[in-house]
Amino acid sequence: MKTTLLFLLGLGSFAYAGTPSKQVIETPPPAEPSIWTWFAGASAGYLFDEYETEIYSLHVGVDTPWKAGPFNIALFLEASYFEPDGEVEIWDDYQRLPVRVDLDAELEVIPITVNAKFEHSFGNGFGAYFGAGAGIAFVDLDIHGESSFGADYDLSDRDQVFAAQVFAGVVYNFNEHAEVYTQLKWLYLDDTENYPLEDDYAAELGFRWNF
Picture 1: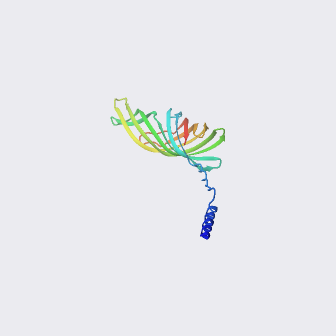
Picture 2: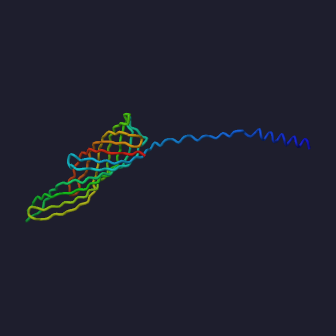
Picture 3: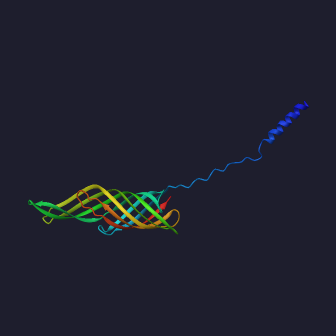
């Protein structure tokens, strides 16, 4: 009986000695920051060479982890809108003679482009960038007027044409989320079937939010 009691006491002492007094809890490694940062923005500007009208744009995109030398690369989708007035010349047969008719033209143009932007930061929130993009423009054309011999014209056309743009500007970052930018942009548009579209230059001011 005495031997059995001593055995049980020794076994309990061994079990207690094998139990650690403190359990070590491993701390998980900190989460790595995202290298893909989404952003969205808007701008307003003026086409000052050919159309002489306002242009408005919305865009959404992502800052990538890719670099080209000192430039950070971003990709974004942009949709713009402008509504210029113009004139178009058509030839009509009047008493079997070709007669030139000058008509007023109203346009609604919506270019949608996929773009690449290359930006370099100078510190203190300032940076500069350039880029280019290509896509498609939806053109809504209305032609109306009256000829000198009294004929009325009222024509409508819907078309999609190739669009491209090249841009460059400067940016100021208020903080890690908000930034303002100003840029110059050259916009190219193919001609529609019934109307010769012009390429033009725009000066724009915009705001961007980084998520």
